Image (cartoon, rainbow, N blue to C red; front, top):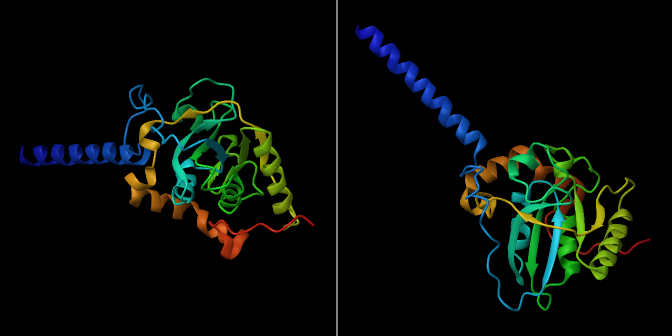
Length: 230
């Protein structure tokens, strides 16, 4: 009887470990529920007058470079580029929609220019990989710049030409007109501040910074100037 109870206890402990391990692996902190998806973007100061939308793979990793910039009021992780209305993270991540992960940057154009945001964008992506970014594969991680108006579109195309002038490889980043944006669940917003250890492990495991260094050298992750088109 003693052996049977001990065995049952061990089996129960193993099952509990598997359940906890599975939750740790899948869920970054909250379920994919209607309540988790009901959060609105943060309220912004009246001075904020502009919005930029960038796709650079995992949206967790695209928030920190912009949050550090004076004049950026907020970054919001979400989805753009598809036809489905209000998709969930699970739907997008599984490739069940035509959306890609994006970060929407809400900023005051009197303090920070769109050109600077573009420089930061390029130095935080692999411009040659149109089928995903780093370890994240599939069209749901494709890179793109979504222009909100004619001026943004012109400047984005100009910046792409500058980047193309640096390399012999074809640039795979599309510049497309912005259509719609859907915010991701609340637990994804500012994930790097809520779960710094998990974020660091993911980023390192994905090889993001190593690849950025290979492409951009000292300019990786920065707003260093882009060269003029040849």
